[in-house]
Amino acid sequence: MSKTKKVIVVSNAFLLSSGIENLTLELRSMLVDHVYNGSEKNLYEKLISNKPEFIIIDPESVSEILIPLLRKLNEEKDIKVIGLVSSNTNDNINSRFKFTLNTQDNKYKLIEALQQIVGKDDDDKTDNEQLISKREIEILRNLTLGLTNQEIADKLFLSVHTVMTHRKKITRKLGIKSLSGLTVYALMNNLVDIREVERS
Image 1 (spheres, rainbow, N blue to C red):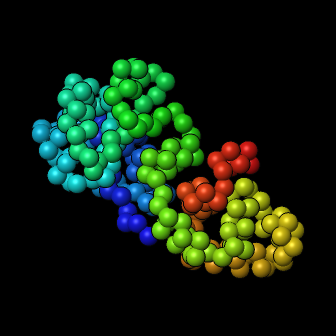
Image 2: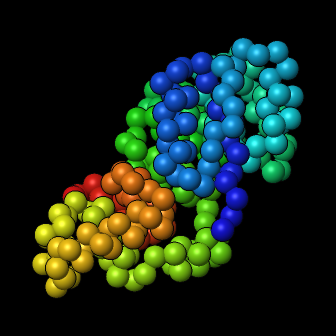
């Protein structure tokens, strides 16, 4: 399985930076290594010295140096720069970023956007398929769609006890205890579609 990707966040807004940190904790494939508020001297040098795979930038936090900063960062071939934008963000600013996250989106849309940016390789998919069984995948899918243990048992012609046993195995194998965490895992591994989750 691929190593965890290192992320640096540049934002002086606590809610934005902490939100990104919490999101990457659920993704498990990314981890925030450092947060800068954007006012640091020699910010560019500090950013690249950490050798991150991703830098997530709040444009408002670095408005005075945004364009020259992006110009330099875009020359770094091994770093993907992601802009935190909204419907109020100027089109000229939007166009400066190859990748963006809309801060007005819900959690699952942000996860889907990050998934597309990060990408998934074949090794990850193979490992995930081997990690949990086909039956456990069926149960996980139904859990993330909001079904109760009884409803899953009825749908798959199992006893409630068997469903609960599978749930415990899924939690142990994946190391994920919360339903929101399991939902993130299912989305990241294409076990469910975001539209199904939003309808449930």
